[in-house]
Image (cartoon, rainbow, N blue to C red; front, side):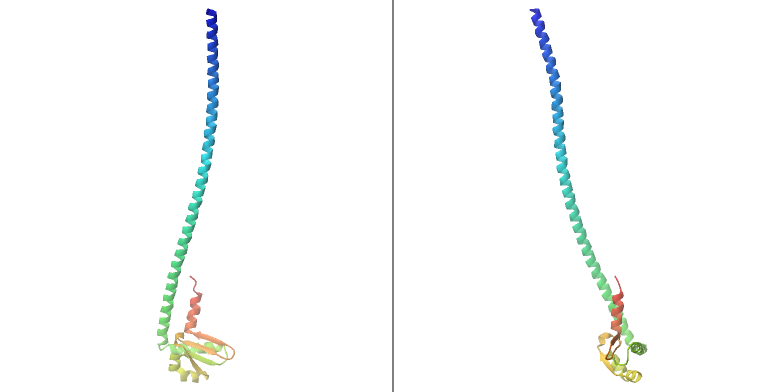
Length: 186
């Protein structure tokens, strides 16, 4: 019986060794399969996170661009309001100073020279001056230029307009101011 027991013991040891080898192989296969599944899950999760990140980044970028556009538009509107106000203040100051000039002694010389310059560019016709200039200088201007003198509104500040049957030339101070101001670029 010893032989049988030895044989049984040998079979048992052999079975245990085989079972251990198979267990090692199964463990390695299980670890490999588990690692593959975990890697696949991690890749899938990274893909999902990448899509979420890209979508969130795009959303933030759109919001940034929208806010930037709104701020730029608001800034431009404010800047344009300031420019317009500044421009109107400059224009008002210039008009005020020129109105003072029209009331000065030097203005009469300016008016005569202004009419002469205007007449150089046209044939004789009717000369239009402001109501104030008409009241102050009508007789003198009619004698000096030997033509009809008529009135234009005092809002033209000073200077003259000449009109004949072919052309009209506006050389009033108001018109000259507006032409010079239109040349200013902000």
